[in-house]
Image: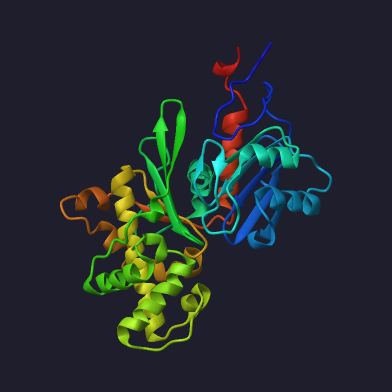
Length: 346
């Protein structure tokens, strides 16, 4: 008789030798939007895409239930992998930038009536997606080649959205292993006098100078306001989307500093993770400013690491342009967890 060794924080229930019954439910849940989809068979692309406003629901289970009622057309998922923008430890999770109470994968599974539910960090899902992205899903940044995803070197993925996410992907003899974390909460990598001024104001206002306070959607708006303060200007609040498209002097300076700080931050992540295979840029903001990012100081600041310039110069950087990469990663996680390899059959 066959059995499957299940693994992964937050797994509930047991599978069969063929994995859980299709369809599978996958999700990418942030502080602003919750995106859901169904995977209807082995190797299938996520379909039945649905996007809900996170704030309109009491929690992850409730948002998923609404999606299933509105988009699943009577289908009952056999398993789920739900990627959330926040820390996940032992099946317990908390959405960092939403007013949802801390929750557990087990409660979500019970609420939905799905026996096997795993909740993972959203950038862990992005990391798991990297080996499955094609050349058309990536845009090189800084004149470098596309990242190498052949299993010969670690990879990194990071990016600003509602928050700032970071994760690694480590090659091992048995396959890729994701390395999630809360890297967006490190200090701002200020490298110029003006950036130090911004960091000083940020620390006075927030009590800390976390990178996420500037390198995120709200962070871009905050950076605009802090630069206005430094210049002695009184300005109306602008959203990240408004700042991204306006071309007045202050908006241009804000976007340029945002890209420069992101480059320094990405270089730090590359060094910390040893991501010689490449650094991938995700999140919802960068695709809207892709041309500006390419012509900005991003790559120069990425490489500006005294004593290890040659090391970082050899690391490619690329923007992820796939529309739903975290759903690809959540699907890959389910396939990795639920479908046994020959060695797992006993």
